[in-house]
Image 1: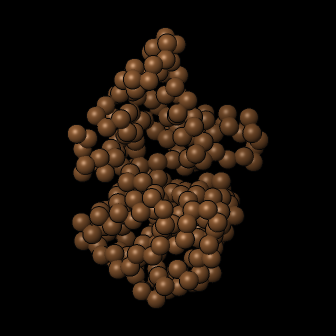
Image 2: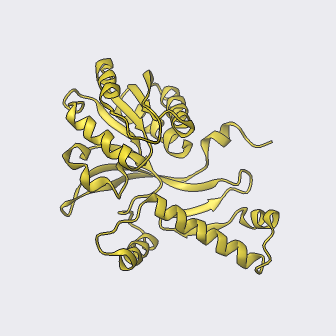
Image 3: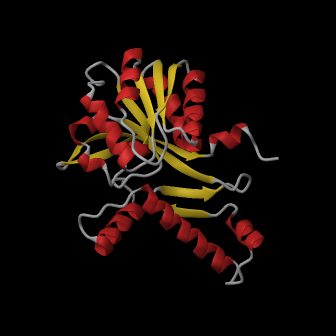
Length: 254
């Protein structure tokens, strides 16, 4: 959560606006996203003027009362985190239906709200959204082009991989590395040790397992949703390279 939330807070305060409302699904990842964005946004001169828990991660709630409350606060920015999937599609639809853009409120958030597999159904309301994430299907690198081509060959031309797919792909690459390093004699502690400092050219870009925190070091991409070749796409604006988990930077392992 902190990779995207903390980075988005800094970019938002420096480039997008100085006042924000945060809407989040009320479960631990949502609370982490609120904490990460708020800490960075306010450290860079912004102010979070309201924090809105927006139901849980299971059934998709009616977002209307939450978005209405945000609109009434008149922030420059509305930072939203919900689980990817139907939650994200409902967020973008509600943003469009309630006229928050016309009211001068920019919708921003992590890439969960513009998930590649849900993006095409979001319509014009998605155009102009600014998000930050570690992967999108349009990333311009050789590994991702091959990954997307193989995905479509396996699952059909209309099928689209997303960040869940890349997480699975990278996880299997890590398992292969550990299996080869241990010559098939798998031991938990030894497997963990073999992955410390492991590097891999992933479809998301270069990754490494931090030997100190055992968390991923990865690129985080700032994207703007727009039309590209007749379809909605998350188009990379900028890259923050080799991001360590900010939470563990503030709370180093003992």
